[in-house]
Image 1 (cartoon, rainbow, N blue to C red):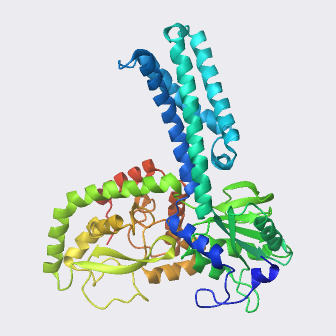
Image 2: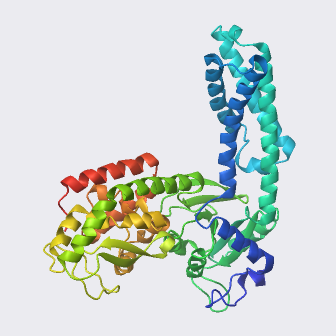
Image 3: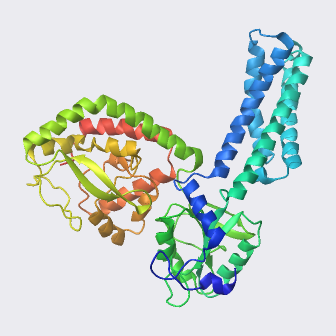
Length: 495
């Protein structure tokens, strides 16, 4: 791609300059985006699956070795316990030998060599432990040799399959990582990085374009164009190349990039940024700082969604009779529908429709001005006051969870008018939308339920939400769900 192509003007999504994506490259970018538009990373999934398969191979090989020696007899306790210990040691030894991650693209002989070294190290450790504990005599030498050989064959077969799968996915464009470069300043650092990017192995990276902070009428797309593109297609990496006088624009650019779910890295090293730094590393032989990480990638996203589906289905089933009774009570209490539907911002700043039991008098609803409910608010119905205080009005959002628009736990979605208002006042506000919104969240169980009548309260809510995104775990979700139940009983600061 020439310098002219990097900056050429045209039509982007029907308005403004175009990104240099065309022909087969554009088709591959769209295919890759469709394959993991929810944040899944095929290579990471393959890596995680590989280490779990390695552990399984160790266990199965031990069983097969015992079967060949003893036939269909119960597996002795010493063999099962040794196999479990070996499985744990093997996974760690494989990690230390570099058998996972980028090594999946190495030649077959190199991958088998790493697996051989790791498995031999584990066997040496087991033999030493057996000698020191004087327990080696209880193991059959035939079983030990057979176990070693069968497991090694399993590791080789697995890596032959994974290498074939990696090559097939690369040909299909599923492993191509889409990269956008933002150049700040006039030192040419972005162009140099683009040239390096295009010189690597074909199919490994795809450059979607070279951007500046603001759109240039004659030359270049701006960050807002990149944000618009990220809402349609997956962008894996955003590299911010700072050169010349570009440091003055850096802080503003980073905060705007914090609203999209992608990895944002600075290249090269810069001084204090005023934003959190995740880690320091190398990308294309250039020093980079990782500022934001894409949350809930690979298996963590699978686990998060499974948690929502399982717990959401259980809660919906158990609470269905109560929800039907509440819907009938809302209809009888005041004229109007039982459910209130409101458009709010969801994952990646996309609009979703959120369901609630109607707690206010029915009438025209404006999305440009939505006053928050206050104490003794005349708009709230008699039943609505009870529903809001107990948070039972949020129960229909279980349907949003099952649909995939929301999660059980996550930053609470706000009305569109409130998003626009606070996005202008709080720098990191839109960073809440890097994950799916939730029925309850870390902010809510820390005393930030109900009205946020001051800027300080909303700032604190945003801080708690971002802390949750950076520190998520299943145990944290379960803790928040438990604390939410307790807060519904004891918290009375909601109206």
